Image 1 (cartoon, rainbow, N blue to C red):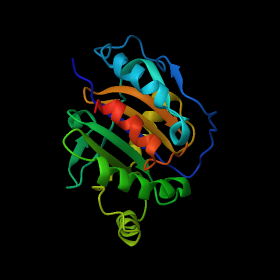
Image 2 (cartoon, rainbow, N blue to C red; image 1 turned 45 degrees about the horizontal axis):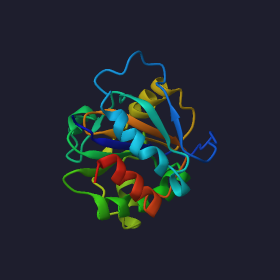
Image 3 (cartoon, rainbow, N blue to C red; image 1 turned 120 degrees about the vertical axis):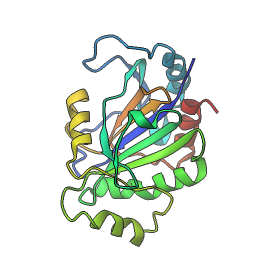
Image 4 (tube, helix red, strand yellow; image 1 turned 90 degrees about the vertical axis):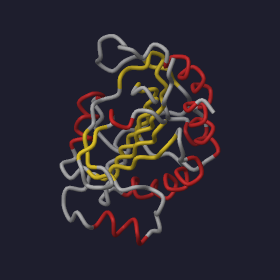
Length: 208
């Protein structure tokens, strides 16, 4: 049995969707069946009571589903897919320089990577700026965000894929995916990813 987790945070400027606090289980969003993700339900059940405090808006799936197919560019500029990152728990963040809530999250994501990144966990922050493509790297350098490798999606196709899969209308948005590629949860809106609440949730997702 495998149980790897990814959090995907699609952070954008339009934070249009307000979610109530408290953990919640929810079933699939428009997908039929749960593929090979039945074992991930045990991980989700472990996570559910920890979706509180700074990460209370995380909705944990009672029936995990395969994560949406996402394609973007890796730190070397070459094409990469989310599926290719299977094998460790990931926090995947979609962000843009035009998105104030996204920028606010970046230092916390950087801290989380510094403190928890390793063989079983990583933060994958995907930039979705479609113009001024040098600006994101400049912003990261100026704000001393140094631990996060740079992933880019200048077509913003990753957000569109999430929007299609989940009917997401605003940002930030984050998903949790286990090491087998199963989505364990989603949050629409920002969170303090460097908080003790976040770290406890991530440890449960990783299985530490």
